Image (tube, rainbow, N blue to C red; front, side, top):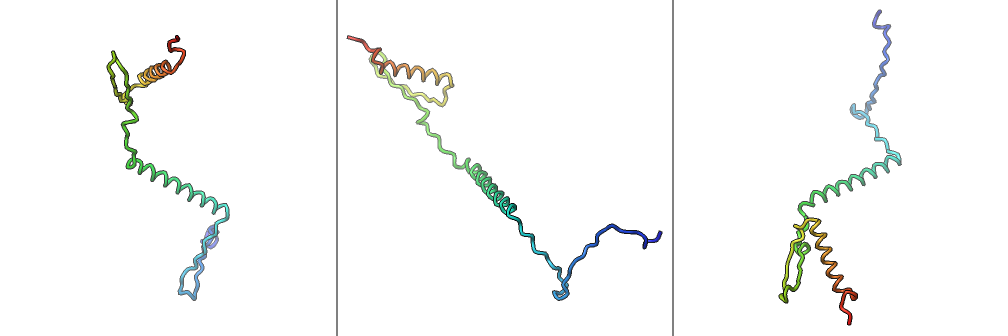
Length: 123
């Protein structure tokens, strides 16, 4: 078998060269995307912008942590014991959930008893 009889299935690559441009190759213009591709690209850009904004907010969150206010977690109780006025102050942030529930129950029962006209003495 001689090399002349072999058939090659390779496709030949042809490159266009303009002779008047000094041997430079001709560049093809990029294909214009269809309307669906444009909408998809717009959606991807919008989504990327939203994700970048979220990442920026999360990154800056550590720097912009609101300062803790102690007044919200303080509970002040005023009462009289043997005709002596007393005042207590509790830091509720250190209470357990059960202790907070007991305090809420006691406080609401005490307030309801003071405001309930049926519990007052009748003449």
